[in-house]
Image: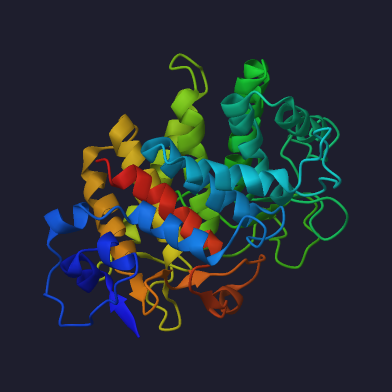
Length: 390
C-alpha cells in the first residue's frame, strides 16, 4: 500500500516518514500549497535512498550514480548535513586508490559522468587523491576520439564510433567545467565545454528547436538518416541532458564571452519547442516528446524533471521570457504528482524510463518504466533544488 503525496502532506510529511505508520485517509482534492512547501522533498528522497542503499551497495562507477550523487551534493550544499557529504565521499572512495588512481579505463562518455564529484571532494577536503583521479580522466580526454568537427564520440570501440548523442554532453561537460575551474585550466574548460555544446547542437538540433537523440558522422548505423546522419525521434531524456548542461555552463560563462548569445539562443529555441509539447493535462512531457497524440506514448518523469529545472533556471537568469515560468511550475507540479510514500515510509518516484539506446518510435514507446530508477531520482533532486527556492 502506498500513501499519496497529498496524504503525506496532509499527515505531516517528514515527521511521519521517520517511523510512524502512515494513514491512508481520504486526501483533499487539492494539495495545500503552503503545507507542501514545508515538506523538504529533496531531504525526503535523499534520506529514503540512503536507507535503501549504503555507499557500498549503491552500485558501481557509472553515470546514474554520478547523476544521483550530484543531486545529493546539491542537497548537502543547501542543508549542510554532513552525513550527505560523507555518503558521497564513501562511495567515491570505493574507486579511488590510495595513490589516487583508478583501476579502470575510460572508453565512453558515460564513464566520465561521476568524475564531476572529484574536484568537489578535492575542494572540500584538500586530499590530493581526488586531484590525481580527476587528472586521470582529464588526460584521457587528450586522446579520446572525436568527430571531424571536434565532438567527442559517445563511446570508443565499435558500435558507437563516430556518434554524438544528445545525452553525451552531460556525461562529460560538467566534469570538464569542474576540473578546469578547480585546477587552473579555466580557459580550456570554457573552450572545450562550448565546443561540445555547439558542435552537438549544430548536428542534432532540428529547425523547430527540438533535439534528435543521436547523430552518426559516418552515416553507417541503421538509424542514421543517409543525408543528415540523425536518428529519427525526439526522445525525452536526451533533450533533458542537453538542456541542464546548457544551464550548468551558462552559470559560470563570462557575460562578455562571444559564444554566450549562441548558447542562450540554442537553449531558448529548445525551451520554446518544449513548451509547445507540454501535456496540458498533467504538466509533464512525453517519452517521445512530439508524439503526445500516440495512444502508446506516456509521460516520463526524468525528462519532465530536467525540463522543469532548465526552464525555471532560464527564466530566473533572464535567458527566456518570464512567460515560461508557468511552464516550469506546471512541470514541477506534474512531477510531484508522481511522488508517493510506500508502506515502509520510503519515497517512490514512478514512471521513469530505464537506460535507453537509440531506436525507432516503437522502441522508445516500449521501454520499461521503473520506480526509483536513479535517472529519475537524480533528475528530481536537481529539479527540486531549483524549484523549491523560487
